Length: 262
Image 1 (cartoon, rainbow, N blue to C red):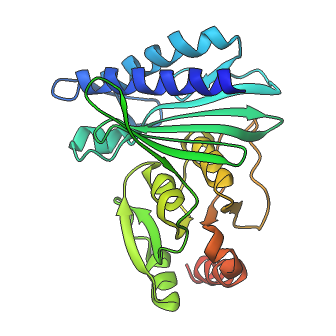
Image 2: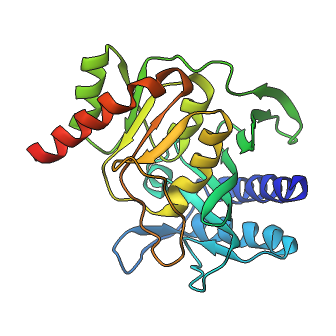
């Protein structure tokens, strides 16, 4: 498994470099679902495939979907937060997960602007920061701090529920784009609730990271999230850092009340 981790880290770093090369000059087109895709998305996808293909495992990417069922495969979002990239706010990342028997067993998230790479596997999770020559200058074990009283939510969502939960629990609200929210939860603790559409490639690496710091991520029906190529839509979910798992039932109840009131 250590070889797979190194493949994923290298692929993420290469993808991040490809993205930044196009940060000041890129083209934008529309997919069939009318969502934007940029030349940076495609360059990152190509960089990831060049590395991950050496692992011998099949790859399912947002930009190159794998339709045939597999027991073990890579699930990739080459540029998570394309709208954030277009807006140049820095809150985009590369997400790479290894799926085995419909569960994420390894995850890597790389934030190109800050050169932070987060990875989780089994009970190990780290935040590594790189210098301009891609030498590691910070190597921080995650999971030691899990009590930050924060509810994470998207930049692009009003997410009334996030504010309801924050007010009820006495937490603050932290807004961020892309899967970076998983990184900050793994780094500092908190709660993340998502009740808006997403895809499995958006969350797989994040869940692997969450699991590695002994946090919990479930769908809002209080069930395990399964990663099947038969349906790549993500369910609505909640994440709780280790210090706040005891709040699960209360947050699920608030989530249900909010859903019924809409």
